[in-house]
Image (cartoon, rainbow, N blue to C red):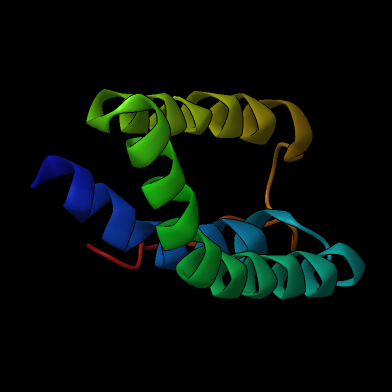
Length: 95
């Protein structure tokens, strides 16, 4: 249940992160890449998961989840600090 709740929020959080922290020229490309990866992932993910399960057993699926650590490191290194419009919201969206 914890994994499902984190996975379901990934799409919205990735788009929010893109809109808040990237400048407009990079933002358009980033949103396009997010959409393309989500489309490919929904089709190829099942095939890749089936291949891993058939070849190395169901325990190997946890190796795919370790890719989230690399994603987190990529976010820390490549996303610029500060907001794109140089001002922070006075009141958070989810007050």
